[in-house]
Length: 188
Image (tube, rainbow, N blue to C red; front, side):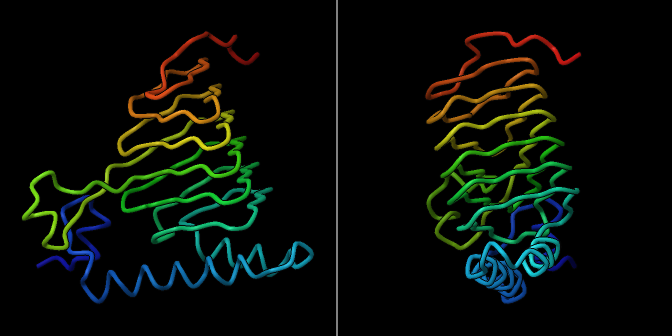
């Protein structure tokens, strides 16, 4: 029989009140707290914490404070990953970023999904749906990305947007809900 933590990792409905799941969450929250208390000059300490927190992390990452992550092991980022102040990653499912991704302040990536049925939702179960972000993406301030969304490569998401559907590569998308308003020339 699968543990609740394994169900979480497999993308199945899981009990978030389970002690093993709670311990994984507490571990991530404490690592976020530790990171958020560091000084900018403590580069080695900051690097160590990020590498312990993230599932995988490329080279040249810069993550500003205050970061909030549910589990950490489900967040993956490529090279040249930049996260500005006050960002949230609810990684009940994988949240994957390509190379050269720039995230403005106060953005949220919400891979968590709660059941629609109130009795089931109130029982303490949830699931996650992965979020994927391609290469060369700029996500503007205050953007919220919902479960199951894929954002292609060479994309700009305008500030304040709420992304509820996939955004194709080579696009500028804005609004609530975010919609493509312009094509961007492909990278050469």
